[in-house]
Length: 317
Ligand code: R7I
Ligand code: MG
Ligand code: MG
Image 1 (cartoon, rainbow, N blue to C red):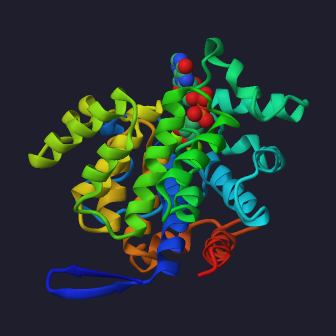
Image 2 (cartoon, helix red, strand yellow):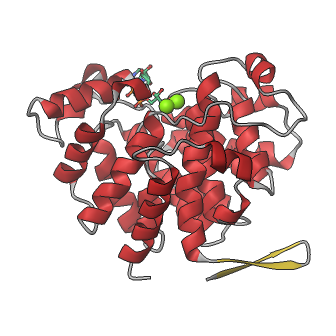
Image 3 (cartoon, helix red, strand yellow):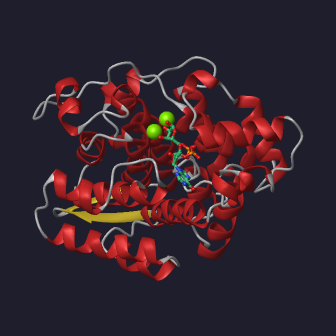
């Protein structure tokens, strides 16, 4: 149980609410960003006017959430990580209409045709594997399941990435996002950058965290964030942006709308910001209008909420 001091108020955010907040927050961020994925910052503004409370347009989630659901289902069913089982779950859940990245699509096709989950993705992109953000965007359940063990979290983030993303920078992006979620669960916002700096291993991410510190210290405008941190599909151009969007504000909706307002890979940066923010504030702060609009159906919001609760219970909590 975490007790958070804010503006003189003592707000209790219980762990179960943080687990739910992370998964629903991720789905909500994905659905909010989905209608404007690939748009410029200016185009986003024409769909979501500045200064007004944003309304969810459709509430339909994309590949980010479909894969996040697969990670959660597999961790719950197998009581932890099982690579072959997680890969099978991704293949089983795969719905092309959710808009998968080309690398993930190809890796899952190879697995479906019989290649091993450990090898299928390594042959992509000239033999180095993908550094896309597809492993990071779905990692929230790993951040929750291993929130109290940084080294297990790193190991499982890497292993679960390999199913589709075996490039070092794709794996590290997933581990960084998972660790940001773990720190958010633990209530560590003030020292998040310090902890992340200690955690990361690659210079590309070390440099991005350094830039984040500089950008947070001033009132940076959106262009500076896009140039300095990125808003693209590479993990190193989107995970740091999501962490920044969380750290810059004190409310779930401010962080998530800011992330989407940058344009570019809006569903994914929205999802990753929503996961960190939801893990920090709990599900109680997710705007009602957004939660209500989030799709239901077979694996919609009620199902995602149930997965969060099962993840929580599977930790023996
Ligand atoms: O990472 P991935 O699953 O894509 C996720 C994105 C998210 O925005 C989702 O919302 C969905 O729309 O797709 O798919 P990948 O194809 O593995 O990576 C995404 C993109 O990153 C690729 O299509 C490439 O443009 C780029 N990329 C690379 N480019 C050059 N060299 C990834 N790895 C490389 C690389 O090694
Ligand atoms: Mg997507
Ligand atoms: Mg995307």
